[in-house]
Image (cartoon, rainbow, N blue to C red; front, side):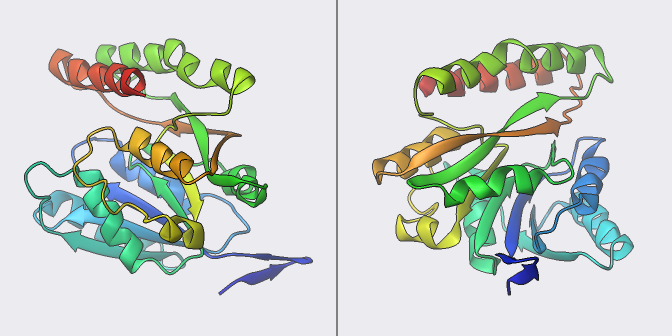
Length: 247
């Protein structure tokens, strides 16, 4: 339920995090989000593959070490062939969430203290259907990680900032975004987007097709992706190029 903070009632925020083990900084990124400071009441929905034993063990340990946090582990079978695993997990998280505000947060993304306060008030502005932030990379642990960081922290930012000065946003950065539950459900939520690869753009288009606006907020959130080798680097850089191009 909402809590009283001064003269304002703040809604319960459900943070939906699709999680996949493999990155050595995963525990650190999840821990930072658990420890972030905010006046909002928060519940975490950690969405994992039921066969990801490493991820499940890690998340169970974090839950035990943070007994004051509300964390729900949601274990799911692998996504069907041709379905986007992230979207499938978000559909399950939506069903399990109880908050009035839904936030999507990638497992490599870290919200700063009072980051919710920077972003969520934009959802109350007239016509706004979704609010999102701006990522920057903080992992320079390997040569390939540094290469990705230099790209994200320079040229990729041009995908979002200049356009916001000239025109309302037409796409979002899907590493973190927020919607009001009632509005999101009224336009169908993630239903129908399961087979779309570029889920960021699909979500943005759904919001805009129903007459709502996207809000680029001042929130800046760190991402930590440790890139193993040239092959891993190539797969990531393709994602950063292909999705903005489609948008």
